[in-house]
Length: 313
Image 1 (cartoon, one colour):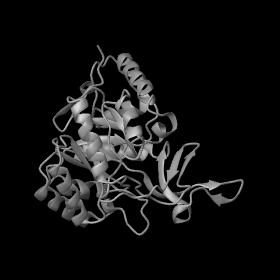
Image 2 (tube, helix red, strand yellow; image 1 turned 45 degrees about the horizontal axis):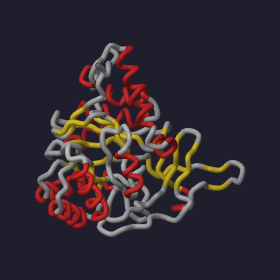
Image 3 (cartoon, rainbow, N blue to C red; image 1 turned 60 degrees about the vertical axis):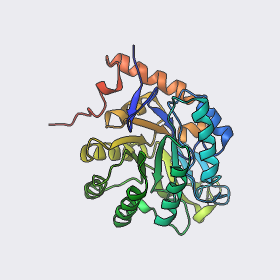
Image 4 (cartoon, rainbow, N blue to C red; image 1 turned 90 degrees about the vertical axis):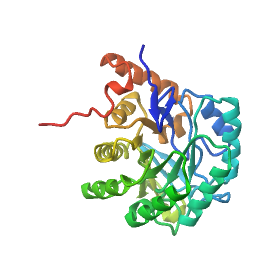
C-alpha cells in the first residue's frame, strides 16, 4: 500500500499536500473547500491584528508560466480565522491545522501570539516573515538581525509549535548565515519559499504593466519559482538541525514537482499558483500522480526517498 502520509511538528497528516497561505483560505467558503479536499490540512490566510482590504486591483494575474501578484495581505483579521479553526477542531477533532500570522513589527507579532495563546487553538503557527507586497514594508526575512530579534521574542512568549515562512535566498552564504540563526531556536519548521519579490510582467499588446500596485511590481510564483524553491528547500535541509523540518513551496503543479520537493528534504508541500488556477480538486490529481511515481520507483512511503537527493561525485 502506497502512502503519502507525513509527520510535522510531532503531528501526523494523512497527506503531505496542503495549500499555501494566501490561496483558497481568505474566508470560510474557501476554507470549507480546502477542508473537503484531498489535502492533508490547510493553512489560513496570513492574519494581521486588524482586517485588511489589501492593495488596489488588479493585483493578481495568471501568466503563461505562473503568476504575478501584489495582494497586500487582504484578510479578515486573526479572530476570524481562530473562530473558524475552533469550529473545525470540534467538527474534525483528529485533524491539525495551520494558522498563518504576520505582524508589521515585533510588538504586533507578540500581540498576535498572545491572542492565539488565549484561544483554544491546538494547531501549528506559521509566522510569515516574507511578504514582498506591502508598500513601504521590506521583507523581514532579508534582515537577518531583525529575524533573530523576532525569534528571540517569539519564543519568550509562545510555547506552541511554530514555524516561519521565508523569502527565497540566492547566495550560499545567506543559507549559511540564516541557518546559523534559525538553529538557535526551537522552530518546528521553515517554509521555503514565498514568491520572488518585485518581478514585473508586461502586456505586450498594450505595452503596459499588468497589475496596479507598486507600478506593476509583484511577487512571482509558478514555474518561474520552482528551481529557486527546490534550492532553498535542499540548502536548508542540509544546514538546519534535524528537529527543524521543511515545508516546500514553489512551482508545484504536478506529482513530479511534489516528488522533487520531498526528495530535496521537504516533509510537507504547499501549492499556490496551480491551486489558484485549478481549484482544490488539484489535490486529487497531485496525490494520484505522486503515488504513481512512488509505485514506479518501488517506494511505499515518503520516508523511503525524502531528503535523498543524489549529488555528483
